[in-house]
Length: 153
Image 1 (cartoon, rainbow, N blue to C red):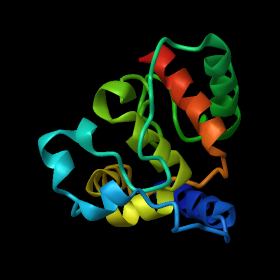
Image 2 (cartoon, one colour):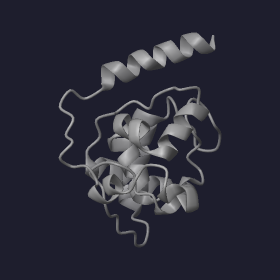
Image 3 (cartoon, rainbow, N blue to C red):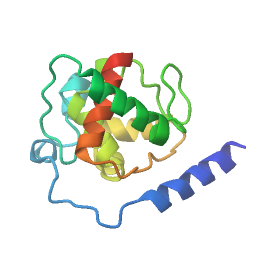
């Protein structure tokens, strides 16, 4: 059964991959740091690899969080649950485990993150090598999902 689930998830992943992937938006800070170096001492210092290099967090924006909740339920909840491990990691506590930039880059750029980011590789291996599907969210949508994550932390 596990092999069937992994096979089906792989098909979804392949089908959802964006053919217009943009490497120009790569996080230059993360690219200049060898994978596996920063996150070993402090996982929250790792910003990941992708278009997001900085996220300003203030008070939680309830409207943005509600939009993020809707996006999470529609696009992410097939593989992620709030309080339990499923196909992917639980969402609760993610803000304590990862930087906001890393979270957004993982959502926006999962393929490259799993290839080049040591934490993403470790999570991929921990969850039976089930790749995270690129759901094609915009940075604004991803920021809303991040805001929702802040409410369940």
